[in-house]
Length: 295
Ligand SMILES: [Zn+2]
Image (cartoon, rainbow, N blue to C red; front, side, top):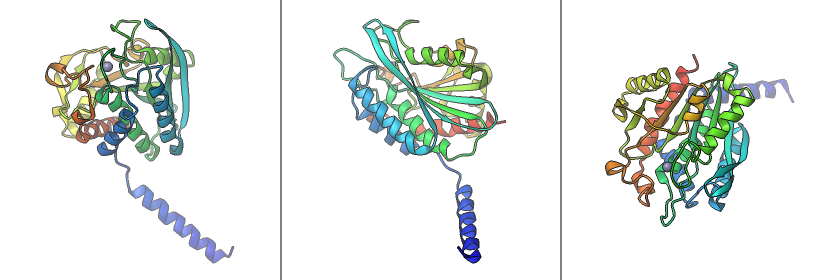
């Protein structure tokens, strides 16, 4: 290779590197909605079903080209309907700070006898949101390790209790406690039911106060606080096993889905209720919060 050609190639490479750096990657609410639609197209996706296994393959295929480390936390859950095979899917985007943050959400849907429940918002929206977030995180600079986790088995088989539901998050919190991952985890943000066109996120009193304040304050700075409730509420969700393990965690959930939450856990939880703008709000606030957590 001639020196002149080598210089030209170096100049071209430098120019293209500059171009990439000059375009900050943006979260797309429309893309998150599209990913959600693809997840929902697999049909009812309860833990252990053939449909959720197809969705697991789909999620893994989306992550493959992103250059992250993908691992699976597989286990057999003891449920009221017997043992059920479950699997959390974990994508790790390495940083350099030695600390980490996690964004989690469930990808299973509730098994409801006699109801065709596709969980567009409940199970679908968190799945699609995390897939779009993965695309963004793979292309943005960050110092913390960023874990994106698709949790299995959030839904109870029948009536919710301390031991029926949150199977995946309880398993992962125990695993991460045992292997030391929790010691480096400075914050965890769980998303659930964040696709409702009429988006109001619950101000959850079970979440860690400083982290909840950081998220709400970030939303206010972005002019998005109309979607973040000011009156206090509380909810039990996949953040709880991490809270109980001592991890600062916040749950972002819109638990006001349809009139008096009437679309929740019914056949009416379908794609037509969701809007790209809601995914955009949550994506923008979560990414801005991740930037604050870098400091
Ligand atoms: Zn649910």
